[in-house]
Length: 226
Image 1 (cartoon, rainbow, N blue to C red):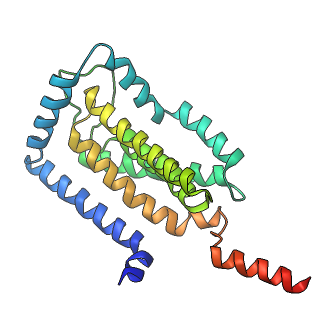
Image 2 (image 1 turned 180 degrees about the vertical axis):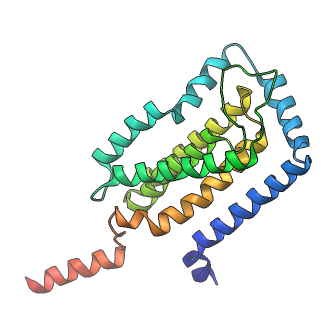
Image 3 (image 1 turned 120 degrees about the horizontal axis):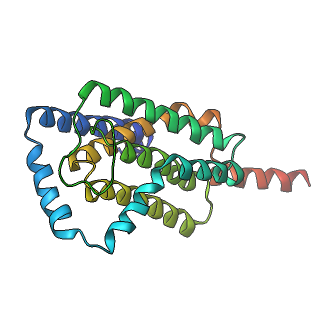
């Protein structure tokens, strides 16, 4: 049972994320999800906004801007494993942006009015920053978990990238440019995309994961040859 779940975990992630996204979309179109948005507004915008915190949230939000992602792509190309890890991350970004734009064009939800701290254009649902953050930094977390040999570094990398994703989503609500449902739906849709991408496209650019058993067998064969 456990082995079967591990083999099909990406399918389960895709299905679960898409189901949650569709539930949020259905409730949003029916108006029910606005209750969640109202409570998030009361908590984040009314109670948590501080003069010293606003520039920090702006800086965090900028971690999903194209110029920052371009620098990150260069770092991925330079240090990540595989033949073309930078191209892999770039294709991942292009794909999730296209998905986001198509979804926004179909839904056409206006952005929140009256409490924005920064200027933004375009439609609100789902959050583009949240989708880009989940897809890009989520891919980096997946690469770290898959290829990093040091268990401590692997866990800390996943936790660190996860915190970045969560903070970027939170910053969009804090800055008043997205509803909470935009952010959660963006996370779900991007997570579903990431499950597909890491299954079908990432292996075209990155090496196969070396298992401990395979490494041990290689070492044994080397000793036999000597």
